[in-house]
Length: 315
Image (cartoon, rainbow, N blue to C red; front, side):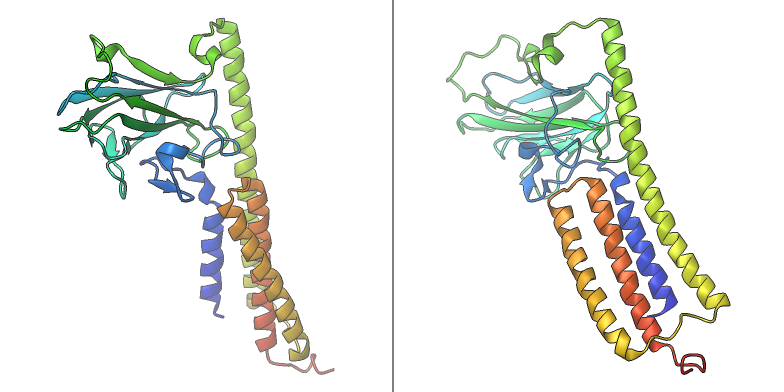
């Protein structure tokens, strides 16, 4: 195994460990873990992958009853005590037609769903009703606010909202549908009146919590990268000044290689399970580092077994 390949492999794995610091700022994917985002929400964000009551997700301009071939201007808004930007995805199950406007885009591989294409708020979108009676039309909307760290972490909050627009002739339309707003959020967030001191205290508590979460994320990720860099440096100095790794007899190398290989394979399976089940990032990072250490152990066994014996080895 060449030095160049080894350095490349370790560097790629280090970048993979740092991957949590990047989010979907250009819009979420249509599916996440085989679940449709507008129905199941932005579960890669927030604490524990659960919807948050701290966010108010609203959509205004929704007609109670749709007319045929009519374009409606809808406004999607996010409200949070500390943060004011985020993203969304909305879907009407292919009944009508969304048109991408400024700050939005049609989601790839979806049946006409619409999402943001950059973090923002108060998006005005266009939805055209069908040209015939297709019955009641159901909508699924997911929205999230972000803390601006660039990582889908516990500082972000998301929720979902489902609503229905009735078929023509089945309900009394509003005189002005632009005044109709549908929202989701807890009662205190929607209607509770808090003093400025209470709001400021909540904001400060949120900032402190975010600093703690972000500090842990960046500290342990940086520490992991430093450990990897130290191992690479050790390999370099050993080859440069110590003449390379010591010889390992094949009678020892074979059982050692098998043992380390089996352990590493088990750790790799565990890492895949951790990623698939969205295990908290701290546990995933520990498993990833142990997997890297196992890979390095297998690598050391191989290169030491390939080193030729010298006089010192045969004394």
